[in-house]
Image 1 (cartoon, rainbow, N blue to C red):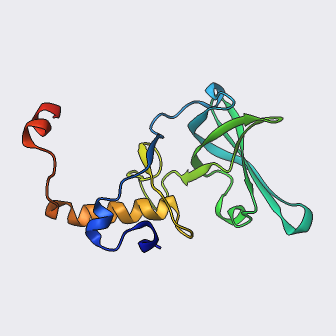
Image 2: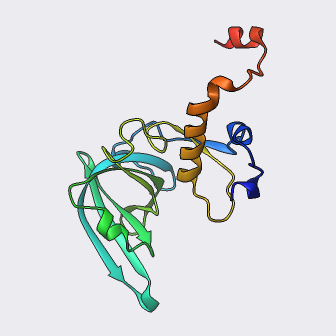
Length: 170
């Protein structure tokens, strides 16, 4: 899969540039969400439901609230979320706010607060790189592998920016 995007060595991975960045560092209160805009919110799961619809398809919904309001996270054809998301879990969600007929995020990226990734999340609460992907790859997987490789090998990389530029820009 990595070879499909031109990554064949550790060095290739170290220099694999994101195609853009998303700012997920600013958490908004639910009441401040604007329909049509992308936002990051943090809240507690108040209720959840998994419905089966036609031809074996599913809709998983989670009502998530903070001190300012409630929104609904909606995921299609991901029934496994019914077993992973628990009432009482604190989540960070990132997605586009919609109001049809209620405030919701459709297929938001989600991370459990205090989950496996701890406080130093690669996916939420920061500016997050978005990489070009090949079939079968996920953003979370690529972010994790790039982070691991850079952590392990960054001291062996040659600095390519000229010293005067580095000094001038701090």
